[in-house]
Image (tube, rainbow, N blue to C red):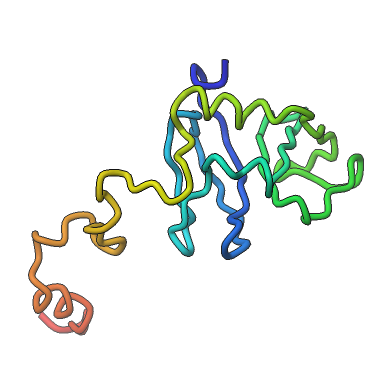
Length: 141
């Protein structure tokens, strides 16, 4: 159901409490925190998070259980206060079916070990040239 159409997802990181907005999310995606790079969805998420849906814009929100949400008073990013708590966390179940949930502690074939989060291709520019790009005065020719 969810995996056929992408949607916006707001999800709180359980490690650093940063809110991550994932645009065009589909449940088969593996998503990581923009701050601490911790995996955002795994098989333990049902213990720590609750799911809400905005009835106005259809944004899904997966928030920590201790985040205070007052139905009818808390608002979505679109400004609507028409939020609904999802009882059976359907998004999380769909993510599990689509392969978007990974067991806590599982390594994704070493993908993250060699990842340079600052540069997409760390081998294309040597470190000396990379630093020089930032040390140059834009007024110099």
